[in-house]
Each structure stands twice: as structure tokens, then as C-alpha cells.
Image 1 (tube, rainbow, N blue to C red):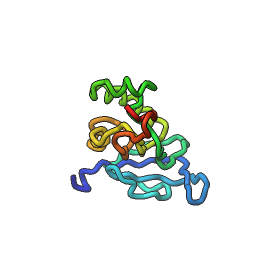
Image 2: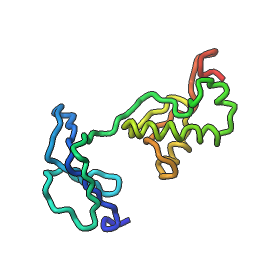
Image 3: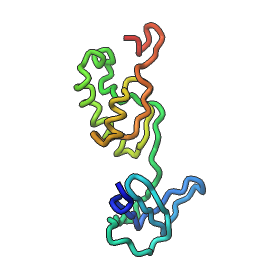
Length: 149
């Protein structure tokens, strides 16, 4: 896709959370092309004709959150029962969990046992919505531990 074909989005009228300075900044806008933030600049520049402009209405814009210990496929506390379910059912049960993670602001997660690379790749390919997953594969556990099935 060429730069001319890349969708452009401009987020205006929001407060940006600056983590380096530890404060909220007003009067800035964020320019996104495709999946990349390409500029944070002072508000007021004329938007290109091909850009979609979204008024944030004073809401706060912050970086995506990262959760370093999740179990995306643990839709049921009975892990033994989960292990006996067909992969397709487990995947369908993961869909609302993934959507809820995004809705809470998590854009990246590390699955510490359970999610596989096919699920992570499905999200990466845009087949299903969800945060970027760094999957560890099958859970490791001591004999008799909660991951020993």
C-alpha cells in the first residue's frame, strides 16, 4: 500500500498523557497513518482533504497498556475441562476476553501459558480483534501444579 493509499486519522481536542513529564498536555493533536503515529503537533493545522478528523471532546489519550501475565484461553477456572474442549470452542470463548482487554486499554499482552501462536497470528492478520499477544505456548508447571494436566 502506498503512502497515498494509507488511511490518515487526526485526533483533536484531547488531553495527551505525557508519561515522561508525568502530566496531561492540551492543545496537541495526534496524526496517525495506517497503524503508526506519525506526528504529535500543535492543534490548528489544516487537515488534509483525505484525513478523517475525530474530535475527542476533551477526553484523555494515553499509550496502550501492557499486561505481562494473562491466560487468554482460561475462560473457565476448571483448566482440566478447558484442556478437553475442541480448539475452536476455546478460541470462540477467547473472543470476548480479547475484546474486553482492548476495551480496558490493553494493546499488548504476554500470555503466560495457553494461547498459541495461531491465536496471536489471527489477531496480527486482522482476522479477530484483540491486543497483540506474545504467546509462551503451553504452560509449564511442577508435577501436580495447576498447569499439570
